[in-house]
Image (cartoon, rainbow, N blue to C red):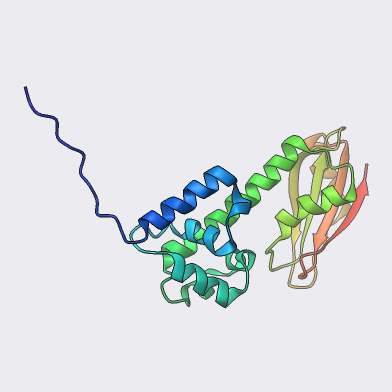
Length: 196
């Protein structure tokens, strides 16, 4: 009868205990219990397993000014921060994309877009870091829930166009009962037009 072999152990890095305490606090008290640099430390931990992420989190926040701006930063700007390699840039871009996809899906599944504020909140996730003007149509069912978001056109930094035929085709294809047309400005503020 052979003796059981113990599982291999990996040396813990010096900040492993700190990271574990952050995760425990997140599980116990939720996201509001963490500061932005602590949330960023945990996100960076997805890409950096063997060293303390606190110095890099603080450097990124100093460079870009806020957690949201770190997520909005283009990869070349992220890579210019010492300690932020391609894995860090990819992790940050993945977290941003996953968050936006979750918010869009959550809104589409649970919230009827019956008020301009709800529409604006939904569209903020779509336009948050769009560098060009884009025209989209939110195709809604009879209860004003999102069936699909159709991109009608992509323009330049200051203009985009959409044509009535494109809107009609998208709405008919999806069987939409209502359509919300929206386009962004580089300020990130969408213009809205509701039609049914």
